[in-house]
View 1 (tube, rainbow, N blue to C red):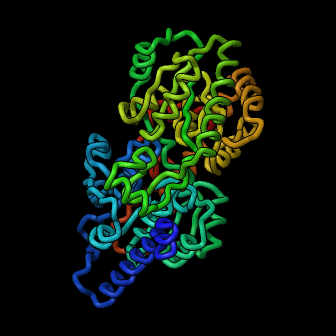
View 2: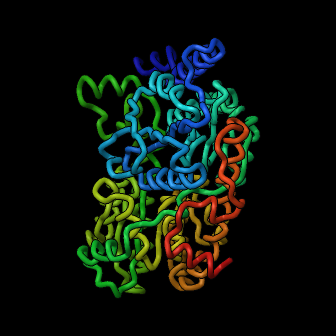
View 3: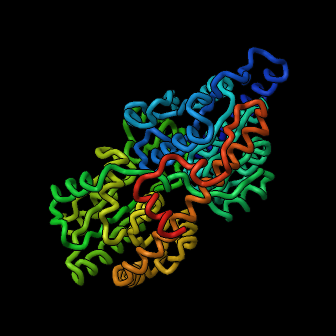
Length: 481
């Protein structure tokens, strides 16, 4: 009864959107009145705020931002830019984003946005899942709100390498209202269609992670050998998630019970947000994990492969440990709460075959030619594998016949691994070309907003708009372009 009453009294998601909207409008009013606004002056560094989902030990989110920073420095010039990155937890991003100021963002973030965004000459929204209701509306409000804060002051307002999906009515209205003056560079065409339907300017692009250079292969090999791999047996790496605990939604009743009695601790996401969970969710989660385990066990029986579970985000530890138990406790577990992004990707790139529900596990291993079977909960992996040309290796977490289809896909992926490796390597240069074009489009938008910025006098070619590339990526460009 109390829960239903509170829901009728207020919707925390809508309240958050209203609060951020009010602060954006107040920021615009102060700008119109010219009250102590931070304005760009030629000769001074351009101050950019990077708004992202970092500090949660999400490997994909962190390495995206790392590569974005490297590219922005290349395009803008180190002496011309001063970068600040939001983080939920500076301890979890220590050692990342070198030479970039990190500012801690509180869980209740609207006042923070109103204070921090106006200190800069522009905002770059960094999160991949930038506009969607699948995970938590609050995350998209954070991204769209940051862009809106910059746009209302006529400053640079760019979403970089973004994905857009299904949004509820409230979030759609919020994005339409506050991002109409922003530029969102999307990582696929379906995302552009979603945002253009809301009146948002877009450009095409890709993910920013393609240029990521992990720790040397010897680092990952040493970790794997210490866990029991002999360096000879085929190596199957599985990246599971819990796909059925989303979206995370605000719940004042559970927040009160957590604070007073410590209840609902296992479902707590952060602040007043809690993961969705029920007996049905648990059943579906068990079915998903059992399907992964059956598929892997069958492949091991046929190939004598060594199996490892990798958690790309700290949240994935439970999924990894439960899957390892279903594999008779024989699969070592590596999770991002104990291994940084350089180590994890070094481990991943040793895989003979990858089975992943994590988008960036696939992106970060394609430059090493690792073939991947994707088991997806939304459009991200589907869009990626479709673009690569490996759509036949795509499954959904809730497929009713997941187990037999997964067994077939793993067999097919393993049998055709050399063919898939070649097509994966051929795909990477096309993404580097798109990433370079993103750098050009970013520069064009910057010059539109700040025509006095000291633009470099360089040819508009790939090498001038990508960060320094690893030897591996350089070889791929030479071989396939």
